[in-house]
Amino acid sequence: MDRIQFDTTDGARILRNLYAFAYSQYKILYKREINERGKSYKDYVYDAIERYLRVKDQLYITTLEHEMFLRSLVRRSIYNDLLPYQRKERKTFLESLEENHLISTPHQHPEEVLRNFPVNDSSKIDRDIMLKSIENALKDDEVVKKIYTAVCIHDFSLSNRMGICKEFGISIDDFNNGSRRFMRIVKKILNK
Amino acid sequence: MKSADEKLIKLIDEYCLYHSSDQESENTLREAGLDPDQVVNETLLQIKRIRMKLEAESTQKNFLELRKNLLQRAKSEVDKLLSSEFDFGQFLKTNNINLAYRNFETMNEAEIREFLERYFLLKYQNEQNEG
Image (cartoon, rainbow over all chains, first blue to last red; front, side):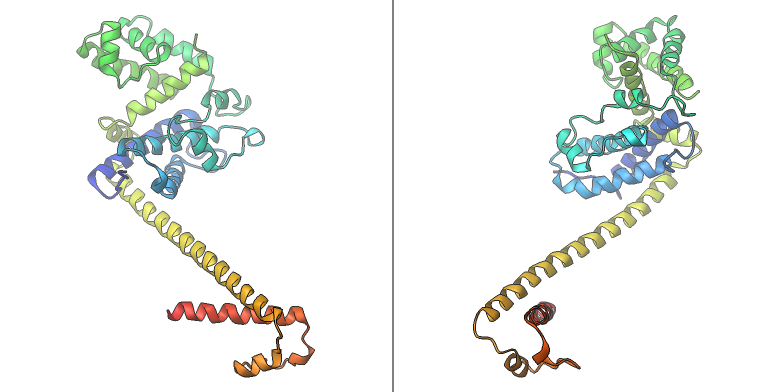
């Protein structure tokens, strides 16, 4: 049972990645410094760490899974706070853990969260337009189109480079350059 | 066929994972105007605060748990005492207890019970502290 040692080089790496993860997600979903609940992305990082420290001794998982678990805590809190107050399901943290078998599902129905997102909220994401814009932006780039199909239609993870290259007939170099272009397109549109 | 929401969620996830990977997270933080080393140091400080808070919570929880156990022990002792022939006056005298401004003869059974429970709880707590 390896736990994260935050005050080591590896711990620093995990914290940097967690911060970057929270920042990226928060920026897309809230598009402001402080959200309606008075929280910044830092608060989500600190909350996740506190929750993690409370339960870490009960987790029988590997270090990598500890890291994923921390990310899932940030992700779930950020998505859950998008829900209108009155519709938010009140579940205890431990209930959520049990439901998710600790880490098997890293989120709590984010699709539903997006669907319930308040229509007149100034931070509302115009999801259809966003997706269309991304699809339009990559339509002339064959490699990026293949990567998009792999990720969004066939559920590949972008980190599964070998799998995508093999399945979609892309060379490693093309994939590396293509995934960078893909992320630039997504970044431009998601952060608009 | 995946819905637009499902595709968008996947894109957001992949985007965030990409930008928080070992290779990209430093760039992501710098682009956000953050110093990666400072971020780590600030978070380590916060972790220290969280750990202190958790330790305080744990101490408080242990204290309450201990007090609950001792109170239960005190209650059992009082039950045992009161179930037999019990002379409160003699008990006070034997244990050299001064009631201070109270007349033990006017105390009813509930008051005696409450007094005894407090007396034994205090006694057990002192024993615990000394031990």
